[in-house]
Amino acid sequence: MIIGENVSFKKDTGLLGAIKEALSYNSNTFMFYTGAPQNTNRSPIDLENTKLAHKMLEENNIDINNLVVHAPYIINLANPKNFDFNVSFLKQEIKRCEELGIKRLVLHPGSHVGLGTIEGINNIAAALNKVLDSNTNLYICLETMAGKGSEVGSSFEELKTIIDKVELKDKIKICMDTCHMNDAGYDLSNFDKVLEEFDNIIGINNLYVVHINDSKNLIGTHKDRHENIGYGTIGFDNLINIIYHKKLDGIPKILETPYVSFDKNSYPPYKFEIEEIEAKKLNENLIEDIINFYK
Image (tube, rainbow, N blue to C red):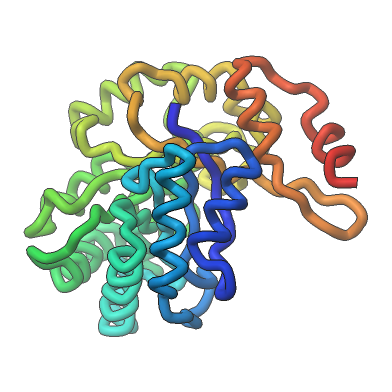
């Protein structure tokens, strides 16, 4: 099982710090943003830090090919407004990933903001055709979305249409998000059927990342609110079935579950969630255990 979580990538500690945080949760992969997801502030990649980080990955038997970067939220390829900025900034993120040695970049397809799904899809494909070239040395993994507001990509059909319109489609893959899929209307209690549908429309060979999140919402509500593993409407057993599904072997699974708040601070749940996932047993005292650990 390849499982990890979203960790911090800080200016002073870079990839080395991200690895140390991931190791503290006993994970064997992780995901990070190369800078704040809400703005364009970016520090140069420290090549010496990165060299040391690659050595640390090898020492801890973590395959760098399983690491994931998430593109910043401010990139919206579905709306032609600021088209040049979105293309330029995504190219910059790709270059940063390549400098770090990361091969999987997760990207929200975008929101059409009233233009309509078809135009949104056309805009996304047009932007990706500007971004990608034969020298691009990673895969852009379009994320399945909840369908909140005017989000594009809440169905497999929409994602497939985007891929079909991209010239270098071999560089486009998919990231499944369990919370988003539930909220979009996919019944994850019958994951075999969902996976069969995905395989028929897109092809399971194009699935490169899975975000493992429970959901605060009922199926089909299009709200996108993550919940801790086993504490939401998807349920622990359904998520365990997805995590351990044989057809998903070798695919990195990434936790993006909520931090637990107390004493005016918030603390990561990942160490404890990975423990219950490995034990295949729901920790009914998860929140209490996290609070006691960080007191």
